[in-house]
Image (cartoon, rainbow, N blue to C red; front, side, top):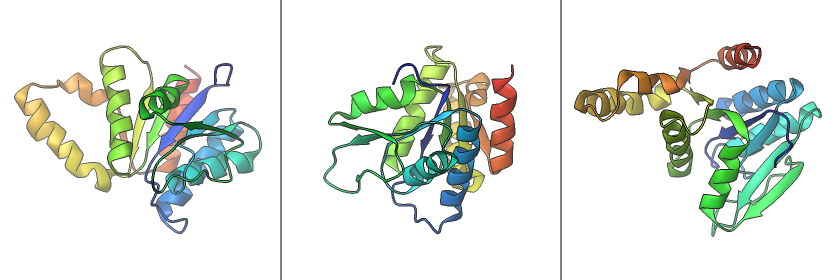
Length: 185
């Protein structure tokens, strides 16, 4: 994966249907970012991963990379990954998903999506990674934000600056504008 252009990793549920507005949002973001020269990296599976790979694939301008994992269910490589790598170890796959990207878009998802989000958040918090992190869908992430404020901040387990390590968004255009702005800094 080294030698890629600037890359963005996009995470989200493998169970999201292609008719879901989240699917279309991920597809649009990935297409726009690929047209701007960003490689798009996903877990290579269905749902949100397929949406992001599809957007990048349809742009035809940047790599659409799928980093798949051998699982007993759900994880079948989507047809939009122009480069596909299959891992048998979750830790190695997670490292690859994180290592080459400078921006991360986290759409609604389950335990795997949250695991990836928290891993990146810890790396940014501790200074091991400089990255932009976007959580897409304020309503979905509202209970998590409430937990951060009422439990983690209140108890002193994190501080207010830690809450600045990610951005909560509901707008595709907001994310695209922010990524473009940071690209030019």
